[in-house]
Length: 619
Image (cartoon, rainbow, N blue to C red):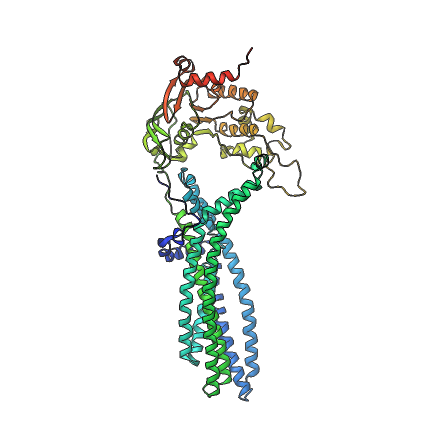
């Protein structure tokens, strides 16, 4: 298991999508077009006739203008009104088409946005382990992937119609220009080649810049959130951190903007040079046309059509090159979306989807684990057995590996060496979702959801979310029922203030204390009744002494005859476990009952004595 280096703000453009992503642009184009058809087939198909019709407007205008001018200047006038009416109709048609195209583009963008979000989050939900969520490199890639939305892909989806329109307009106007002056047609076309090359290069640099500044953007958002969100507000004000965090945020923003500024300067220089080239070609063409008219080689109508054709060809070329460059940039950005959605799962899916009930126990056999090949070992040859129907407590200092042990039992990671077994079956041979369905777990860093109290408990088992009696039973077991019942709307009280605006009921949302959240999280874990394994990581860390006593008394009754793992720094809470193990430096150094470990006079006895002395009052 390895993690790549996070891209820094000073890295060059090659740190971003890389050559492989550019090579795969055509493959990504097919993927995007396939997604367009899946998201909105009739909207996608509707772009073609609109594009073809819009592309024919400029040449039709040029030819009707030529015919009208020639008819008037040569004294015929017989068809002038018809040509004028035709110009009016083409103008009206040309005025309506962009609005139809804009609607189709917007609708396609909305449907594509939904489809892409669905696919991305389906892929992310499919990562059964935690390794990718704890890898900064993957988080940067995921952030880039989220930017591949229906809007950002518009140059490829809705923009395809614009590219088609410009192609039709370009070919028809080039044909017009070729009839009037083959040499100028070739000159105008060749002048577009450096424009296309330069714009494609700039699009690669822009996506590379976005990738190179991705880490800095995440840090800038992090510091900004600390300055604006409620969770950090107390410490920010108590410690006077506002200026410090603002400085960090502005430093990151300065680095990001410096990268943007460098790219903008290059774009301005290139675009200015190319604009000058286009102006020179257009000016030279005008001189040529006037000279040809004075020599009698062109009529006044020909000059009018020539000028319109040159301007139209250049406009179509600019639009085509811009569209291609933007589509290229969008495809490079989409490569991140494709990379994430095509990633294999970070864990082997396992085979058993019908896991038998636990009957013998769970065993760790010579388990070694570290989070990265360059990191130190967190667990070093751990051998541990959790017998069926018994309670096991794990104690140890911070950093001893207790939380990592829980991650392995939940199979968020697989051991680097050794194995974990469920009744003799290696967890690698068990489907992770089936394994986790058989557990009730309270994590030390549990979530506080901006949902109702009922939902905060019910998310522990969505199958019983609509069963009030089951949710109330779990709340009572966790000692949370009385607290929840006292809320303004009881179990239907929203436990957040972030969704309310001026004029809303001020009592509608409630913010809980840390201990109250702890009880709800415990109820969430206990909602999973009848599961084979109960894991409680610091279940009373946020509770006062009275609440802690009540909760542990209830948990002792609940754990009787159940297979359970309890992790706690409060050693008084673990003394009644059937077996207690001490994890120290990634190894199990002691194991036994409370009385046995106290008699042994080791680490456990020392820690228990130190804690007990804290409750002793000198006479």
